[in-house]
Length: 608
Ligand SMILES: [Zn+2]
Image 1 (cartoon, helix red, strand yellow):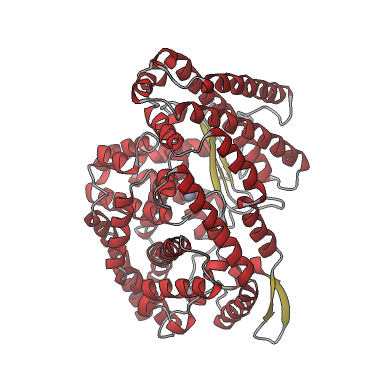
Image 2 (tube, helix red, strand yellow):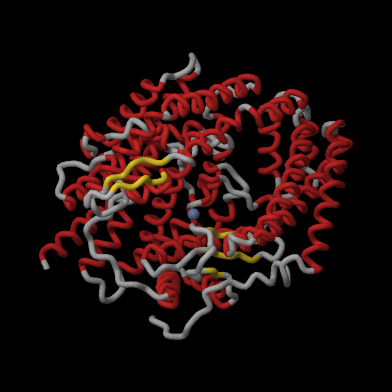
């Protein structure tokens, strides 16, 4: 269905507040600030008397009070996030966002007090708390709070660690950001033109169709990273060293325990997943070999990983046609999702206009207060933009499905965050592939886009995980040198990519240039991506097998994502055991079909 009726490209935010900084906005903000103060005083007083059987009701009320703050705070931050993304030049929005971060800091103090009170609670007191009717449907979160609380030092030590962290732990991360934000390198273009290029543009140059440009950006960029090697090594060693010290003081046995807690995942499940991937490197490597063949080289170099394939992209797509493509795919595969998407378009929950002062990127946000979602992106007319629209619509649908639950049962871990979005993406791509008028050339283009996820999630992310894990292991016995960091990184790349990567051209400096290794808030910012990719692949394979009969199960899984560990959410709704390596091997095998289709499309395209 192609529509000619123009559709609005900007969203309507008036259900958040009729006007920015208007009377109702101000009343809302003032009440929130006052209630944060009240709740903080209440939680602090309670924390002094940890949950005892007699105080369970007061404690439950403190949790409910905190839940209410979270709901209002996210309503407020979602609104400001929408406004400032859509007009990044506005100083008024920026000032309000700064004020919001002060409110958010107050909320985290309330949470700290709740944790502090839970820490000494014995099993009987904790059971009494969970039995409180006011906490019905919230036990998963309260249990997670308790698990977090157990691994805390006493309040004074935690306060000291957090104060020192500003000039220590977090300072290394800031130093890295400041230093690398100012980096540039000398670029010589094939026509002889020389230019000093900011490091931030290197990634774009590495996606240039001209291999010589990619290679120069890679080689010249790495000269700069190598010059900064000592500073980067000092930062990564200090971050990991501080974590080791804090984990030891907090009684955390393993450096993966905290990231696994955040991911709501067991170590055994993680190990099973990576073991299955290691046994199946051949499949994603095959995609790389197809890429090398298309490019006319024996193997891909590191600087070819994000190179565009010489395939024919689809012609430019209008906003209306992009929406119609998503709508048609959803309607025919998943009518309930289609109805929801139609409603989102009708109620103007989408912002896609191409204009100045919009922040780049795409996101989905929403308010638990109004139970509405919003999708933000800039629609440039490529098929990639249509995929992004479907992706964000998948996130919105996930929030919608969770919307019937109490607010603190809607908070899912990063591991489960991308399942609904990837699932929606796959519905779109498979819908497009079976649409009428698909030429082999267009099929090849779409399947390239689809299969390219495999080397990214099944090779590139495992490299990051292997490197980080080995580095944290070695860091236990002392500082890891620059040359050893480079060696660990090269080894991981050769091991995982194998013959699919030109052995001469791996990237020993990837540990320095990848920002993810330097984030102070989170470590191992890698495995949740691969987990989400494979889980959604397993879901989609099952959907293709069972058809519409699978969808109620799928929705109950989405609804469980904020109320259980990954293992339990999957087992209780889908009946799968993700602790088993076989589950992951089967999920990987599910990707195999599109590899075959891709090869066939390339042959058909060449033969036409
Ligand atoms: Zn996403």
